[in-house]
Amino acid sequence: MKSLRAGVRRARERLTRRAGRCLAVSVALHVAAVVTHPTAPLDLRVYREASPHVLSGGLYDYALHTGPPIPLLPFTYPPFAALVFLAPARLPWTVLVVLWQTVSVAALVVVAGCAVRLLPPGPGRRRRDLALLWAAVGLWLEPVRHTLDQGQVNLLLGAVVIAGLTLPRAAAGRGAAVGLAAAVKLTPAVAGLYLLATRQWRAAAWSVAAGGAATALGWWVAPRESAHYWSALVTDTRRLGLVWSVRNQSLRGALSRFLGEDATASLAWWAAVVLVTLLAVHALRAAAARRDALGVLVAAELYGLLVCPVSWSHHWIWCLPAMIWLVHGPRRQHPLSRVTLAAWSLATGARLVPLLIRVEDHLADPSPYPALLAWPGCVYAVCALLTLYALALGPAGHGEPLGAPGAARPRRAVDGSLPAQPG
Image (cartoon, rainbow, N blue to C red):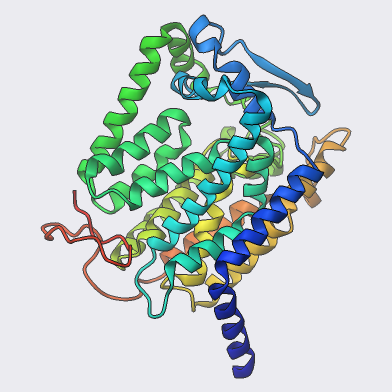
C-alpha cells in the first residue's frame, strides 16, 4: 500500500511539473473536437439575436425556434444582460463563436487559478502549476463541456465572481464583481453568502450597490422590458424549461422527478430546503472557523445550485473548485472527501447527465417518471450534499477565524491565499 501511494505521489508530481504541457494538449484536443464535431451554440444565438431588442422593444417576446423537446428558447436574463451582450452581438457569427470559445477557456483557467489561490498555504504547493493542471482537467468535465457547447455565459460569470473575490484588495472591487455578475444573471448573487460568512460587510454593501446600479441602468434604457421582467417573468420558471427534466439538477428538479409533479407543492420540498439550509450554514461556519476561504465559497455556490428552482447541468461549473478543495483542502485526508471526489469524477467525467437526457428524450410519456432514471438523475445534487457534509465536518487546522471581529486588517498573503478581510 505504501509503495502504491508513493507511486501515485510521484506520478502526480510529474504531472504537476508538466502542467503547462498538459494544458496545451488539453486545449489542442478541445480545438480538434470543436473543428471535427462542431456544435450549435444555441444559447449564444439567443444572446446575439435577442439583445438588440432591448433597445427597440420586444426583448421578452423573442424566442429562438429550435426542435423538441425544447422547441422555443426565450431570453430569460434581466435587461442589463442584454445591454452587456449588445457589443458582441454586432460581430459576425463565426468570429463571435471563436471569440466566445477562446474567452470561455481563458475564464476556466481563471476559475482554476483563483480556486487554487484561495486554498490555505501548504508545504511544497506550486500554485501556478496546480492551476494549469486543474484547468486541463476541468476542460473535460461535463458542466464545462456543456457550457462550451451551448455558448453559455457560466464560465465568464464564474471567472468574474471568483477573480473579484480573490484579487482586489479594496472592498469595492470585491463587492462590485459579485453585484455586476448578479445583474447579468441572478444566480451569481449567491456569492454574497461568501462575503457575509467572511464578515466582509463593506464588500457585501458594495455588491448590493453595484447590482442595483446595473439594474437601474437597464431600467433607464428599457423601462417597459424591465417592468415586465421584474414584475412577472423573474418568478416564472415555466419560461426556463421543464422543471422535472433530468437537465435540471437542483433539489426541486430531483424531487419533482420522484413525486411526478412540481415539488414546490409538497411538504417534502420545504423540508428538504430547511435541512439543506441548515447543512449549508454549518458548512459555511466550519469552513470560516478554519480560515478555509475556498471551502466557504464552494459551500455558498453549491447551496445556491441546490436551492435554485432550475440548475441546468451546465450551471454546475462550480464542481471544479469543489474538486480542487476535495483534493487539496484541509479535509482532503478524510474518507468522505475521497468518496465525494470519486463521485464528482465519475458523474462529470463519464458525462452521466447527457446520457440520461438522451434516454429521457426518447420516452413517449415521462409520467410517472421512471425510477431507474430518477435515481441516477440526482447525481449532482447528491455530490453537492456530500461536499457540504465534508465541509461541515469539525474545523481542521487552527488560527483566527476568517473576518474575526476587531481583528486588524491583514495584508494579503504572498502565496495568494485569502486572509481574514473584515471590510
